[in-house]
Image 1 (cartoon, rainbow, N blue to C red):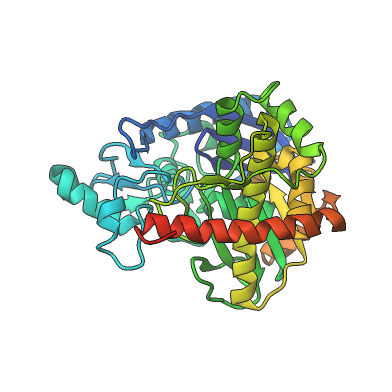
Image 2 (cartoon, rainbow, N blue to C red):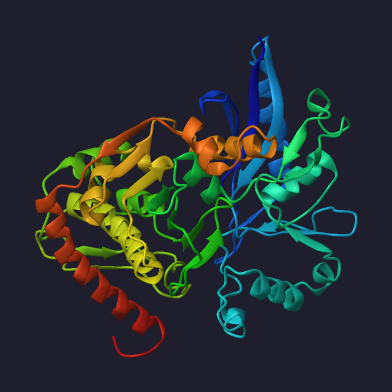
Amino acid sequence: MATTFVLAVDVGAGSLRAGLVDARGRVRIAAAEALVVREPRPGFAEIDPGLWWRALRLAFVRVLRDLPRRGRIAAICICGLTRTQVLLDRQRRPIGPAIAFRDTRAASIAREFPGSTAFDLKPRLAWVARHQPRRFERVDLVVEPREFLAGELTGEFTAGLAPWQCVGQVRGDRARPLAGIPVFAGSMDTWACAVGAGAVLPGDAYDIAGTSEAIGLVTAQPARAPGLVSLPWTGDAHQVGGPTQAGADCVVWCHAAFRVRGPLVRALERVGRGPLRADAPVFLPYLAGERAPVWNSEVRGAFHGIARASAPDDFLWSVLEGVAFAVRDVLEVAQDGSGTRAGALRVAGGGARSDAWCRMKADVTGLPVLRSAEAETGLVGAAMAATVGLGLAPGIAAAASAMATRFRRFEPRRARHDAHCARFARFRRIKQSALALAAGGPA
């Protein structure tokens, strides 16, 4: 009997990953192709959409090479990074490089759009109109990376479809071995990673820990919370949350800047597993501005409480804690705004592979942390969407009950949680001072 797979794709900032996911949510075969986001000028972050298309084709070749003889691909679903705009002309060709999620070139223009930031579409298009008018005149459609790749496969370029909606079928002249296979719209990488980690029911919180963290809380109804976004989530539930700028990028920076002893991964585990450093500086992780919950591209990070005894390991410990504080900060705003209390924090992404950091996030938030046994939860989430689209599951929650079942649990330690709570109060005060400084007011 043939084994049915979904060919799932997750487009990230550093790589494009593709894999064959079976009906139990196991990623049986996977391949990754490296990507590079260029920063040609301060504040700019760009990527050539052609690199995505090349990476997709190469990843498909590698995955199909190892497809089991009795395996069958039932569908393709592409998920990926968001707040990244691909500008297309009438012939659906890219007009220059895509503007990546961390690009801040439109920071000054964003002030002209109430409620907008440098990361939003309107200020970015306004920047293109003012600084690259010929390029702007050719814009006919704006899509995100996953929508661009689905269009390249099918010839159908669309925006705004539900994750389980079919875009079209693969054209033979674009990917001959996959011709005729349905392609599903997918969603943002945060959605795919979170639902792939099992965050599908009200009360499920999630933290997708990558270069930056994306945090949210699943709710039964739409909710309003300052600085956060409420979105439909599974068809039966909603979520309130948002992406931050803080994450593993802060750890990489600290490890290099303070010359912390040992390779990065070993240093993280050594420091994170060590004793609670109550006298360590408190870190505000706004090295490149901050998105949720403050949406301020000009605010900057800080260490507070540096002493002569502060050593490199102390700074790294503070950075791990500061990123965890950013997670708690978003979750508290989400809980207050929605009236929904989080029962557990489901984590995924590269940062979640650290046992020490998972334990610290449990201690900081006071929530059990659940880490999926499947590292590529973005691929699993994409496969869930295709499973629903194919009619093999009545909804995402049902798909998750079959495909997201294996976890490791990290319980919060009460004494450490109490100590982190006192430091979190300082974090909140430092945050308000940094925002006041960014606005030009008194700290």
